[in-house]
Image (tube, rainbow, N blue to C red):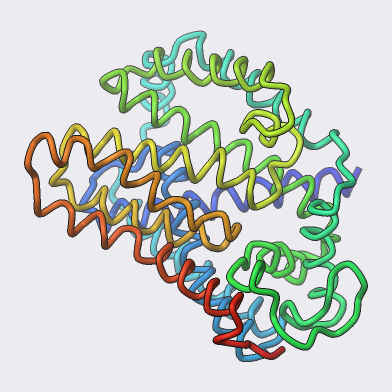
Length: 352
């Protein structure tokens, strides 16, 4: 029973930390309100973008997991305090807050909670024993038990000579290791239970924000869209669809790219279609692309996705200055592409 309570507590804590990052980001964007769903959806990418910026240099320069865990604990504590400071002047009338939520959502909120709850149960209890599954657990496990960062082969346990170009930029498994070092939870539980359920919750919050963007901020229509997406993904039972990855491998980097990152890029493109000169959305797109390289090398394809979603209306409306913002937003992915090919062709070799 204590294990289940620990899982729920750490899941709730990580969602709240994502929300804290989102509140700080929204405050920097000069927003006066911090909706919980938007804060978590935005904060998730700010969280992993900042983690990538801290973890990658430590990984390359042979830092220890203990050092990374201490640094990240300090960063998240500072962000949490900043978020509390941002909330200091917010109204605290809980009755009005509850009535406002009920007025916006009505009974649809129960439908959404049921859908999200069922999805969490499905991803937690589904068992996958593929090589990719073993990598995400093995990478975190070797980091925890050797106090190193990606210096051992997660399949064999042997010390590596050079970093694998395929995984060198992907620090997402190290995040699981950091949480395990701080919490004492086993990497298998953190990767396949806590983060799996957390990714499902964040993914649905992103889908809800897409609905808000499409349906003029109508909450009930957005709730219905979340339920519809759940139904579509549930019946997308083929080997390579985003729905299959969502329900069976959501703790893996590729599944996060297909369901969360792609969803946030779509959200940014919709908002930019509504206002192409909104620099805050361009900055959010940059943060999203920066976070994406922490999950998988497949993030190198997102410049094409961002261009496909923004270039048509930029060219149609002749907003030529926005092309510069588009190029800025995909800089992290371009760095990833160049770095990968330099390492793959042997021009650069990073020794462990």
